[in-house]
Image 1 (cartoon, rainbow, N blue to C red):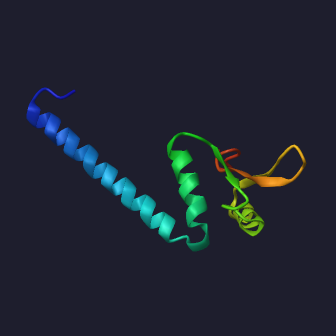
Image 2: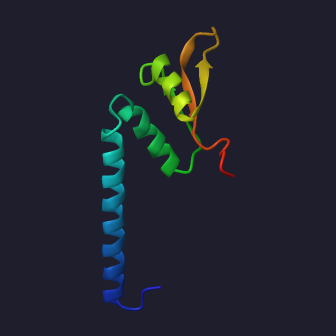
Amino acid sequence: MCKTRKELNEFLAEIKELRKKENQLIENFETSTGDFSEIFHYIIKWALEGWTYCTLTYETCSREQAEALTKMGFYVLEELNCFDVLCGYRIYWDLWDEEE
């Protein structure tokens, strides 16, 4: 890997620059979506962690937003509590990729 201190410093500088670009891309994506910025914040957060879904409360994701996400190509399931009352939605983004 790194054989000298200079190589290590260059390596760390490159990582910092890539992280800065990643944060900027995420911020640009989240702020450009308007009503969905909070929803996409969680989707991005969990997708970058390697998850294929996230669960959001009905306070974070309304029924209308869940329907819109379905139209965008997300797979959305209602989450019900033990009394069959809606608690939120489970949103999948990598369940059945049409291109594969």
